[in-house]
Image (cartoon, rainbow, N blue to C red; front, side, top):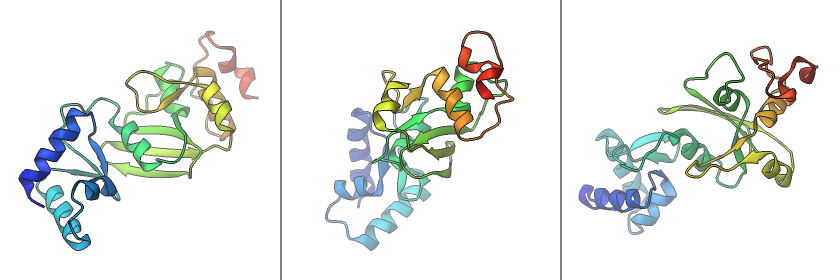
Length: 186
């Protein structure tokens, strides 16, 4: 694959707000490229800074003008394409101002897929499995325009924290939500 062709294709994808790519996505762009040649091309593109390797088989266009602040969520969505995922636990409680510590480089995500932790150049993504029905998850979460993943409501994030057995001592009871008071965690 030629670097100029690759840049052109990345530019086309960027105009469509696509900047997180799986290896399969890239293979579709260059269907005539053989497996070994594709592997070498991807290694070269990463080494030259044309792509950033986010995880195994997952790449980010570092020059994309459409990259936004939710890049870790885009990566999370790409890592669990067949699962329903939503931001919850400490990440959402921090956004709501309900915990005293802010997870700076960690995104906590509930998923109907498998659990796992992925260290990426854009922060660590922690997946925690939930077996709750999809309909219940949809009711307990919100979709924000432009945001890649659904987000837990404040009460849902607190319940998720309690359900998975995480430390609830960090929660600040500001009186805004009865699900966040001390009694809710007993």
